[in-house]
Image 1 (cartoon, rainbow, N blue to C red):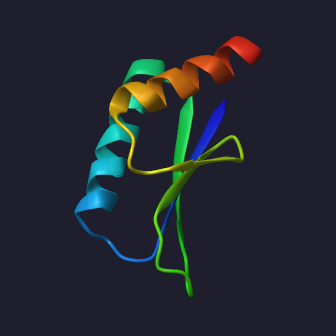
Image 2 (tube, rainbow, N blue to C red):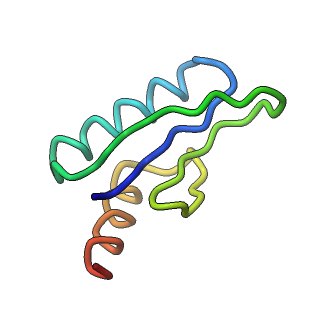
Length: 74
């Protein structure tokens, strides 16, 4: 099981884009658990996949490659 967490401060367009990307990944790979963590002090948005921090300015293909790399390690 792959654990993906969206770490966010505010719900904005970039948050919605990341949520959509994770929805696509969850549909494609079926074994992704998506959760959300609201940050209290920092005004930033990032994604962690199996405790690996990824910035949120990448394309869908980047995140698909990250998931593929994790799956190949297991």
